[in-house]
Image (cartoon, rainbow, N blue to C red; front, side):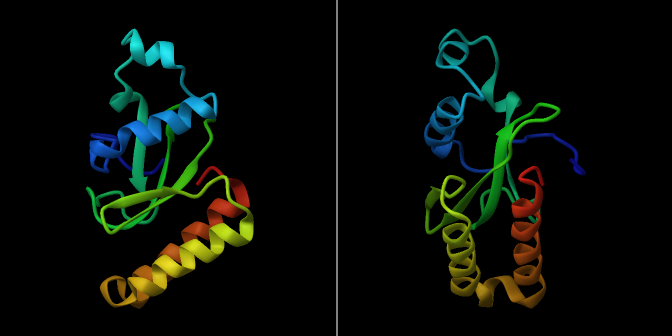
Length: 130
């Protein structure tokens, strides 16, 4: 990762239950680890905008996972005070949801940021670890 991990949970923690349950489902974390407080999950997991890691809680396309050397990277879209985890969708469905987000927010994003989002999603498809 090419950024400094200060507070890696860069999205509102009110979404943490959904994100942590997804990571448990994927085998990245266990419920016992969380219940027994063996780890501080907010230091062990990250949710960071795929283009601009400085975004704290803005609408955007975020990557998330556990902080490990070869961990899986998952995607979610945050828009209108909601998140939608899209990693388990088909390639076409992920591309469609990402494009719909970009189109719906094009005026806010601008051409440069829209282009960066498209490229970042493309890189994610190529190696699922971007």
